[in-house]
Length: 456
Image 1 (cartoon, rainbow, N blue to C red):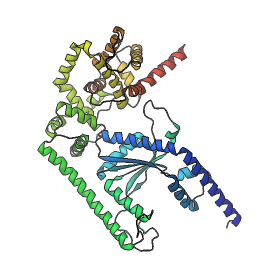
Image 2 (cartoon, helix red, strand yellow; image 1 turned 30 degrees about the vertical axis):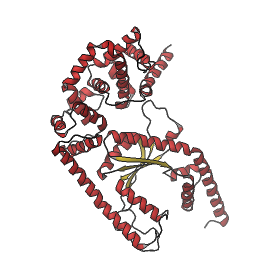
Image 3 (tube, rainbow, N blue to C red; image 1 turned 60 degrees about the horizontal axis):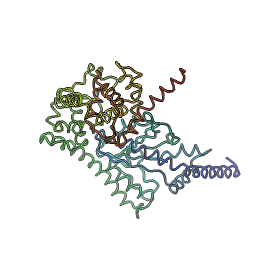
Image 4 (cartoon, one colour; image 1 turned 180 degrees about the vertical axis):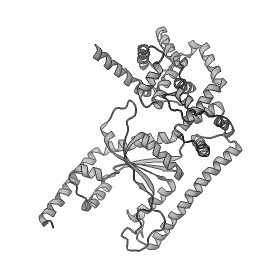
C-alpha cells in the first residue's frame, strides 16, 4: 500500500499536468476549430456529390466543459504529461454526420476512409451497457440506447495541399441517424448534464426507453418510405428533382441488379442527365439496360476508374448527337471562342484534380502523344492568364490557347475525352477556378523547375 505522502505527490502531479493541458488546449483551440471545420467541409462535399441525404455538424470542446470532463477522469487515470491527456480525450474536435436512413451509414464509412486516416473505429450499438448509470432507481432499459459509428482519425491531405500543424490533430467523427441522434441528445441532457428536471425519476426513464423502441420502428418506416418513393417515381416517370432523388433511385437499382460499384459523384451525373433530358426514370433505364462496365472499357478508361457514373456519362458522350454537333460548330467559329476556350481549358485541369488522386497520373495521360516540354510550357502560360471577361489575347497567346484546347479536343484517350466533356458542358461552376487550377498545375511546374535546377 503506497504511503500517504506518495499519494499526495501523485495527486499534485496530476493536477499540474491537467493545468498544463488546459493551458495548452486554450492556446491551440483555434487549430482544433480549423480541423473540425475542414473535416466537416470535406464530408459535406463528398456526401452531397454522392447524393446521400445528410446533415453535418462540427464543434470543439468548450474550455469549461473540458475542465469538468478532465477533472472527472483524473481519479481513474495516471497522466504523466499532457500527451496522455490528449490521447485520453478523443473528441477535442468533433464532427457529427446525421443520415436519414440507417443503411446510409455504410456509405458514409467509405467517404470517411477516403478522406481520413482512421486510427480506431468503435461501434456503439446501444446494447453494450444495460444499467441505470448509478441512479437511485432500479429500472434497466429494454431497448437500444446510444447508437452510432465513431471514427477517430486524422485528415488526409488533398492533392497539392501543404501540411499545416493542425493537420496532425485528431478528430472524432460520429455517424448516426437523425432520429437516433435526437433521442441521444434528450437522453444525454437528461442523464448526464441534468438539464432536465427529474432526470433520476424511474417512470421518466421507462418513457425514455419506450421512446427508443418507437424510434427503431420509425427508422424501419423511413426505409420503407424510401423504397416506396423510388417505386412511385419510376411508375410515374417523374423527373429527378435533385442529386438526392437520383441517388435514391440508383441505390435501389444497384441493389436490385447485384452491382457492387459505389456511387461517387451523383451531383455531376444529375446535372449531365438534366442537360440532355435523361433525368427521368424511363430515359435513365434505357441507358442502364445497356450499361457497359466491362473490363475492356475499364482498360480504355485507365487510369480513371470506371464506375456507374463514368459509364452512364460515357454512354451519353458516345451517342449524344447534340454534343457532337456543338463541337463542330465551335470548331467552325474558333475566333469567337477564345474566352470560352480559356475557361474550358482551366476547368479541364480542375477536373483532373478532382478525378485523379495523383498529379503524375493525369499528366502522363495528357502528355501521351504530345511534346511533354511544350505541354508544361503551355500550362505555365495558363497560370498567368487573367479570367476577366473581355481581356484581349495577343496572336501569340491565341496560338498557345488553341494548342492547349486542341490537346484536349483531339486526344484519343477516353479519360481525357471524359474530362473535356464535363468541362465543355460546364456541369459545375468552379467559382474559385484560378486558385483551384493553380493547386492542380503548380505542383507539377514546381517539380519541373526543381529538376531543371538540379540538371544545371
